[in-house]
Image (cartoon, rainbow, N blue to C red; front, side):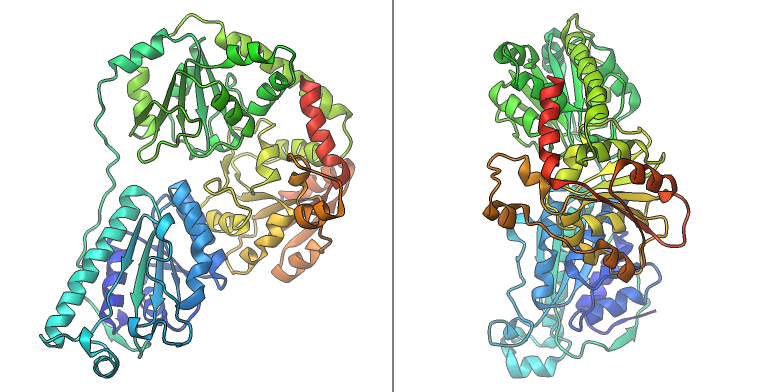
Length: 583
């Protein structure tokens, strides 16, 4: 097996192998040639070529999201690295193990006017788990060092200096890869290379590192005090944000569902299901906001104990409620983070949620209460009203989501873009066989296409991405690769711009609003499909939508995209009137 002749490249590749990092996403360049050649020459690695670095990082994030192990993204020097930042921030807030590996120019060529040079060390400073800034090898291109940077050679000779460099680099690489493996977060390894970059040598030695196995076990403190508080509370709310599928055992969920003092609120991204759960949070909270006895109802909903786990919450209404009507106790379960989202956090259980719940609920007792029954009756009320409302509204975003979501085949992976797509999805129940994902770490529209394509690679069943027109267009380069499966599906709800701004406070029907907030567009999405080899189908009313969905999920030689055009002028009004109607 051949590897780069540069020692630091050899050590890094060997350690990626030792730590089980099999998936490598490479963007083209010259400075990263020692890494590209070494990774692609080793059959242990599965390498993907993605030209656009922003897309490449989200593509890698999508793979890591599915396999839940570190995935590496490799780029050349200069501004290429900066394009990784959106995905790095998403990985940081979503606890996804993304390993960023950037080739760099020698330090003595930075800030002297040389091409493709920027200050790459610590470039992700505030959004990274660990930054490993490796030292340049002195045994490679020694003649250049003697000429340009003799201080790097020291007084001990090349061999001794190189040993010190390798010892330092080895320690930094191990720290970074241990963090990615054990802490599930992004890390950055920056590695300077001097020319020549393309020389190869035969390398047969075993890696110097070791495979680190994750250990999620964290010792518990005594549960007695917490169990006592839980068992004596008549109003307990469990609120779950984004959560990986199959993370919590069903018997734990059943115990929550059996307790009359518990209401469990889930979001579409929670991947938790039970007939007793509250799956449309805004449909509960919005009617209270509009009620004449608002304060009385909010006090009745206010939990004594709030138990949370999972990632970020989509619903702004539940956040506003819990910030205004804070529970006496807010406990959060997570191995790493305890976001004080509601400004009232009282305890952080540093444990895997499933392990915690299994232990904690063994001490829990059902508490006599009308908390669940009261709010469950209101849930039934809004569900029946929702059905009546859907029968009376014209073709619009809301009607489209109702029709689209109930027609998704079983066992699909559902990737939701941010903005309108994930918000509309919160209003409806989903088939429990679906696995749902959305980049809620930073909640940006960038990268939704790339993430979905990357995630589809390691998902056995087909993948569906539901997105708005701006999210699709913003990340259309995510389709610029050779890894889009023929069973990959995209549904684009095209309301001609950023329609979500029409339902947010501050909307004004002015030219400035349309130009700088709604940003209307009339680009032809069919042209994207032609360029990227997608079968294209369109719908503009209920009849054409139902017809399109009849064939959309059938087997095909090409991936498919369904564009659904909706009227931007009425979408916001229909959504806002929905909350009035269910009230």
